[in-house]
Image (cartoon, rainbow, N blue to C red; front, side, top):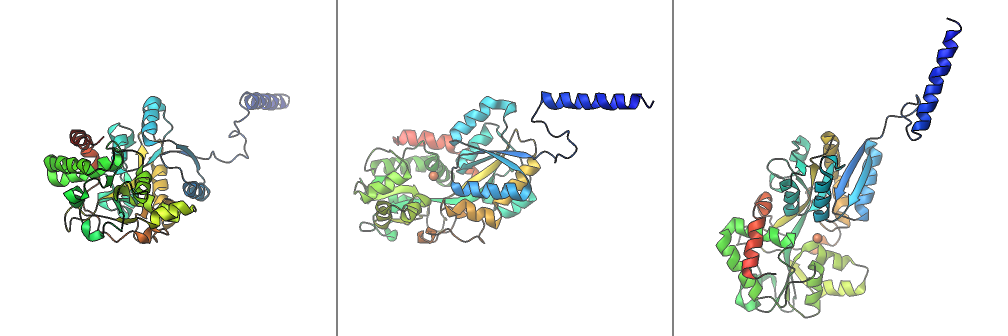
Length: 354
Ligand code: FE
C-alpha cells in the first residue's frame, strides 16, 4: 500500500499533464481557476460608440462577456438563417418595429415573457406575444423650409398630399423600412384604398425620384431642390449637433415637425428594439441584458449619441432633441407595421413610389 500510493499519485499527475497539453486553453480543471465567464452574443444593426460604452458597463456589472456582431438588419437575418440551429445569437437589436417583425416572421426570435420588461415598456411598444420589446423611440415626421411653410400648413400627413405641395417633396425609396412602417399605420387606420390614394398623391407631389437616405432629403431642402421631406427626427437633430459648420447650416435653414394622421389621432412613433434570438441558450441572461438597457443608464447611453427619444419618461432627453416640437404618440400597437408590411409595399408599387 505504501508503495502504490505514490505510484498512483504520479500517474494521475501525468494524466493531468497530458490533458493540459492537449488543450492548453482549457484552465477550468485547475483548482484555482474561476468559473467560466458566461458569454452573451448580440447581433446588432446599430454601430455607436455610446453603445459600446454601455455594453462594457454591463460586462463589468454582471460579470458577462458580450460578443457583439454588427451588420445591417437584412444581413443579420441572412446570417442567422445560414447558421441555423448553430447560430451563436442570443439577443437581436435593430431599429424599426417593421424590422423586428422580419426577424420574428423568419422564426429567428423566441417569446420572452418578462414582468420586468412588460412593466418598463408600454404595451404598444412591444409585440403582443413577447417576441420583441422597444428600447428607444423615434419619430417619422416632416422636415421643411420654414421660409415656405409653417406648422399650420402641415398638421396631418394628408396635408402633404394636397395639391399646393406639388413638386415640393423629397423622400427616399418605398422599400425603406421607415416608409413601409409609416404606410403600415396609414393602412391600419384608413384601409388600403385610402392609403394607396395618399401614396399616389405623394408621388405626384415629389420634386424628384426617390433616392438617398433621410439626411440626403434634408440636405436637398437646404439646397433648394425641394421644400418638404419625410424623415426621421434624429437625422435632423444630428445635423444640428454636428461639428461640421455646413451641417449646422443645413439644420438651421430647415425645421422639423411631427404631423398627426387626423386631428387628435396622435403621431407615428417607431422604436429601436430587442428580441431574444431563437437560438439563445440562456433567455434569463438575455432578459437581464434587455432590462439593463431599460435602466436609466441604459436609456441615457442608447439615446445620447443617436438622438432617439428614451422609452422611459423619467430619462432626460438627449441634447438637441428639445428642438423637436411636442407631440402626442399614436396608440396603435407597433405590431401592425409588420402585419401590414407586404400590403404597404404592394400599394407603394401601385402608386409608382419607387
Ligand atoms: Fe435611421
